[in-house]
Length: 331
Image (cartoon, rainbow, N blue to C red; front, side):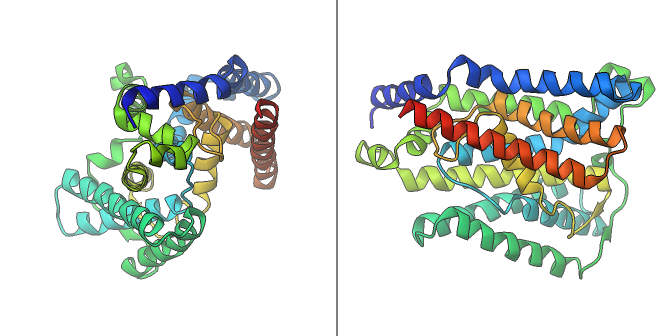
């Protein structure tokens, strides 16, 4: 497919699927939810300290959701994200115990995630198994690998600068505003948004998700695109694992159970469609913030976890229902 043809396909999909309400809806929803909790919740909810806490908690889901955005735009799904995060925390802790340099340990963790994504991509494209089944299987395989590597217990690790990535900002460093991990999320968001908007691979991802057969007939290397997408997604999950390790300071094979649902929800709430061909980085970040604000508001009000789960699940169902209704009207 020539770049001109791909641009035409992407522009058509973008025009049909991104009306003003779709673009602004998540932002309006975020403001409405925040104002609601600010009005009915305790004063501490609107405090600067709580805003920083919300930003810190958003970093893990947000970074993983950046990769999931690519997968969903390409028409796929990845259920193994939570297991990858757990595995990466174990890998980093185990390597730090051996005395490895923290930067190398973190890079090894991200590389571990990338290998997991490469495995997912190869199984999906070569074995021709649907992404839901492949990633459901690797969810269990990778979780089991994490538990086996850690001997089914947490791995303590020496304190390093990795532990400061999502730590509260010290008063004498207030100029940072937020921890380094949040800045990493923002920088990655700009980079991936630029890739989707300006680079050929970004146009190919949209083309594959909007109409895989047409993209294939027009010369797009569909299998290659899918492998790249799943590898990048798992790499982002690996980096999210680094952030999770920063919060925990240990390698925990049982952490992030069900986190993949929060990640997927962030993308869908932000305007991503399970039909493929739709999604935006801004929407995903806003979706991740919505999830975190809801959890923070419920916790501040002393509501039990089951209420948070009901509210979160209801929002996910509503977001998907609105997406299907929009597609019916467009059709």
